Image (tube, rainbow, N blue to C red):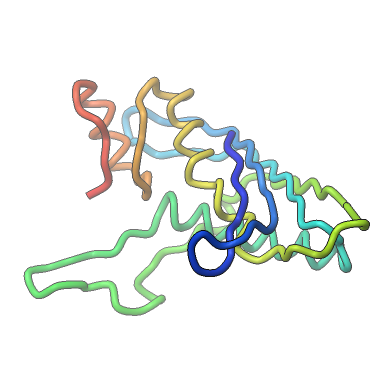
Length: 163
C-alpha cells in the first residue's frame, strides 16, 4: 500500500487530491512475471461533481500507471533514445488487468481538487511495497519488468534497479 497527495504548480506548490493504493500481486520466481490480483484505490478529490466521471478518470490512471510500472521502458542505443513514439510502448491488456475497486471520499463541503493524475502518484510505491511483501526484496525504480525481478531474485546481495 502507499498514499500520496498530488501537488500543483511551481515549488512549493499547493496540495490537491489525495490517493491511496492497495494492491495484491504475486510473482513467479522463475519468469519474474508479476500477476495482479486486485487494486483498490481510495481517492479524496474534495467536492465530487460527477462521481462516475471521477471513477472513470481513476480507472484510466490505474491502467496507465500499471502499464508504466510493469511494462514500459524507454529504450536506448548508441545514438540515443530509440523509443520515440507511443506505439513503441506496450500497455497492459485486458487479460492482465485485475479487478479494480475505486472508493471515493465525497466531501461536498470542500472545493473540488481534481481527479486527474492524482490517482497515479502512489501507484509505483504501492507496487514496490507489494513486491517487497511477495519477494522480500526492495525495488526502488520502475519499471518492474520480469527481467528486473529475475535479476533481483538471482542477486539478493544487490539492490534492484531498472536498467
